[in-house]
Length: 181
View (cartoon, helix red, strand yellow):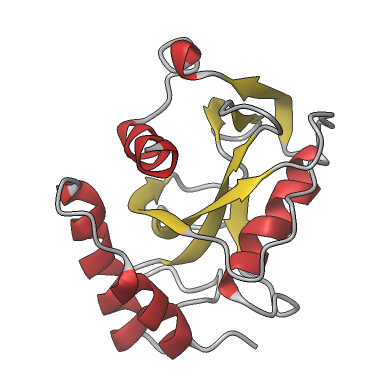
């Protein structure tokens, strides 16, 4: 079971003075972890819960892995909710990458925390509108083959020159620049 204190320690280690939005998200995530009884539970809706995503680089180059999310109808990096079987917080992101795309990230005992982002999720499936306090982890894919899951319309590798085409949000662009710098 993942301890909120270990997640808070990791989040505290994130610092990029050039990314004010990520630092504000960092503060909100730390407040959630320190003040809520179940911050890792997907049924914690006020003020939200922790989620994890994977910023996956393609093997051999710096394209990123995207899924066209079925419910949200937009291109996103793969990710989702913490589950009881996740041994470490980054295992959530790793598991979601595999489930949503079929891409296996290269082994890494402690992937880099590449970004933080708190964002709203619209109400659906009996869940109210709520916040995802998202931790974004960096991975490198072992192979480029993709598989579409039931959660997505499509899966793609996206080069930086295609960020506009896929409407990559600013937080992902900043995280991308951070990891390829």
